[in-house]
Length: 242
Ligand code: BTN
Image 1 (cartoon, protein in one colour):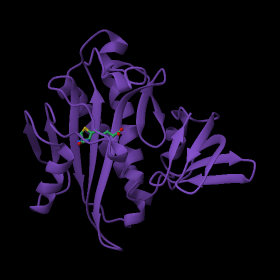
Image 2: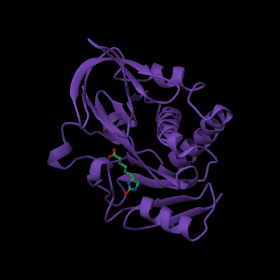
Image 3: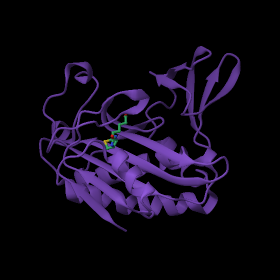
Image 4: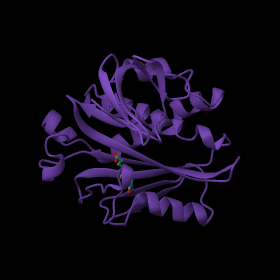
C-alpha cells in the first residue's frame, strides 16, 4: 500500500492514472487537499476547495472481466457509507449507483475510470469526493448538496474518515472478489438504497421511461418495474431521477 498526498493537484483520478501508467501497484491511494480540475460524472466538474472535502482516488488492478468493473463503484459506495457511519454516526443512504445522500442531499460522489483491453483490465481508478466541512455550496448545487459538517455541526477528522473508509473497503472488496459480483453484498446495498420502492425516471439515450425501483441484482444493475416488465438498468448508460 502506498499513499501519495498533494496539497493541490488537477484531479486525483488523473494523478492516479498517471502513476498507474508509470507502474504504481494496486492499493495506491492519492489524496489531495484541493483540486484545480476535479471531475464529476457526465463531464461535470467537482468543487474541490482547500480544506472543505476529501478528494481521493484508489488504484486497483483486479483480475476480473472488464464488464464487471463498474461494480467496484458500488463496492466503494458501501465502504464510504460504512466509514461515515463509523466516524460520524450519520446513517447515510445510497442513491444508485454511487451517490451517498442524507435527507435526499448529496454528501459524496464516486467517479470510476478504467483502462482496459477487450478481456483484460490494466487498471481501475476509483475517485471519491466527500463534502466534509462545506458551509455553503455553489448556487447550482445549493439545494441538492450537503456536508458532514452541516449534518452534524462538528468538523470530523479527514484522516480518520479516510482510514476508516479504506479499512471498510478492504473488507467489502475481499467479499466482492470471492464471487466477482455483488451476490454477497447486494442485500446490504439494497437495505441502504434510497431509490428502493420509489418511482424513478430512467433517462437512457434511446428511450425514457418511469417505473418503481426494486433494488440491485448481483451484477449491480438496478431493477425497475415498469408496465412492460422488469427493466435491468446498468449504470454506464443511464441517469436515474427521482
Ligand atoms: C460525481 O459526479 O458524483 C462524482 C464526483 C467524484 C469526485 C471525486 S473527487 C476525487 C476524484 N478526483 C476527481 O477528479 N473526481 C473524483
